[in-house]
Length: 266
Image 1: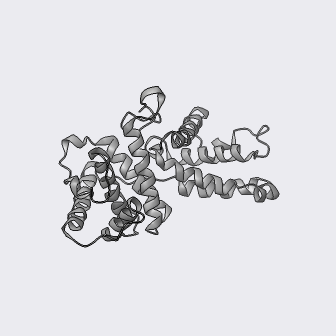
Image 2: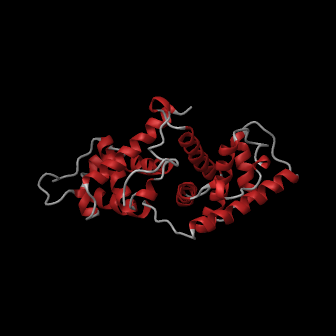
Image 3: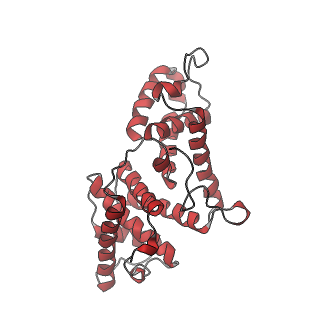
């Protein structure tokens, strides 16, 4: 069923005066960390998307109070933050590590730790291979096993392959000059990447997300699909028969909230 998230990191999590709740702010920051760390690790877009999804899935379905996470004091040597945020970043690092295996782009834990250290301490010294380093490495591996158990080895389907097909089809429909003069393709891929700041792929079908980001990109670029008025069915339903306007509106609304949250969270 497609709809809103619950309070564990979704749109419903609101703090005073309508501002994002602390937990929502943590998840937003951690998603950004996963994306930036993935880029610095040379990871492809699909493993980064998988890492974000694994992270979101874990926190949507898991009560951390029921598990004994590895002691987070080993994480404080490069992340001075509260315990809950520390747990989140530890899960994020394990998610990156696991996503590399799932998507067959294996990453070394040492590289993940070094990139994470550089993320939190841009001007700091490289980490030494001391006892704290090995404790953190062991924590990442232990958290990976915890994530696997909690997710029951579920495989995710991402919108990327659908979006690529839709873009090629739409390019053939549109006027060649209009396509060349407007950044539709660049915009739509950016929107899809930004969608992983939230758990859209856990609440909506992959093909629906692909159509919705394409719809929003066309709106943002002021591009109209030819013969839309005369067509027997909207172009959106040509790509996905079961897609309705309320679903598109819900996805677009969530995407817009991502950018709203970005301006509200320091």
